[in-house]
Length: 469
Image (cartoon, rainbow, N blue to C red; front, top):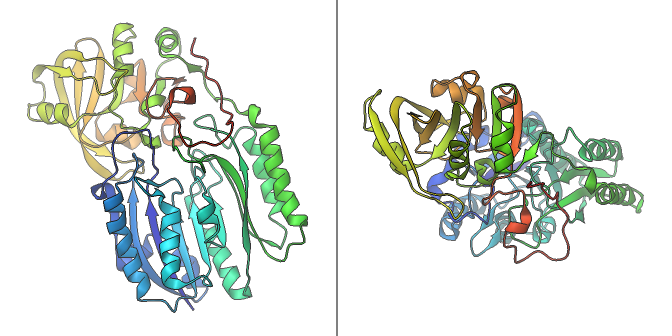
């Protein structure tokens, strides 16, 4: 039996003004694409022939450019046309790809694929905890398996569950139906699976999925920075031969989600920028500060100088901004020798920032890593006379591991505070902090959804009202 496999991913933030172009995508073909997927090993161990459609994965960004999306999609579809005799399809999506002028990139993908392979071949999808599951996607797939951790640590486990779901469908000749139970919440960085209500919800899910009628089951948080009518959380379950009993178990999980949505809390102090400036002076050092409104892991641009300006004005001690995406400043500083003294002017990149002037010296140059440790660009460490070091980069990223700091030759322990373009702290950096502040900065990834111009939400959505005092 033959299974087609592929991955097409980009977590979109529709409030970010920049479109994700094809140059942002890491692309693999043929055997390299096939071997990048954990699911491939599951299928081959079961004796299936695995055929790669392609692999195109980007860091979180704004909406995806329609022209480039369609160009890359055609590469997947071209391969699919060669294998209309396939028995099954496995796809690894993010789940929150939004294409300019199209909408859900995942829905559009599977609909175009169905035009080629027909409606009888089962499709199993693995996706991120922050998926926004559209009705059009649900109607065209048979199984859906999502991450069960946030911050994410179960990438391989999720792929394996999605692959096993497809193996079971094929070997048992099942005809499952995928059901969705939606919960109208906009949960952002407070949604961590170690806390409530997710801890209880996932316990309920694991118990309910023991039913033999369950092919796949997931709880999704949704990606709240997408202006689409299908945004938000949901419970998804794929069922066979159900007389309503199994269905009722998962509806009860969704009902619990709705009833306990107010249990969600931030796991660290969530403070306004002004309160952050005051608090950082008295906390054990180093204090890690999440610049949440410019969180590049949520698709923001990572170039706002708003928080830097606040910290400069507040006389907050020795600090580090890691990092600031500014290609122009990076280019100017990288042309200077280490130790060179200079002055720089930072333009206001958004409506919240102001132009800043800094004097200081170029300390060193280094490598900028991506979210998972891959090399994505270069950076320059600039030491300002005001006592704040800034890493200027030519690549948009977030410092998610200790290796990010090592590559730039800096140690967080040498600073009073470190500002990251992040929401909740990723596991790879959380252990470096003595104290933590979730700073409620403005921007395209703000946790104050009242400041975002949603146009397509239907009905009332609940979210945590941040204390901006």
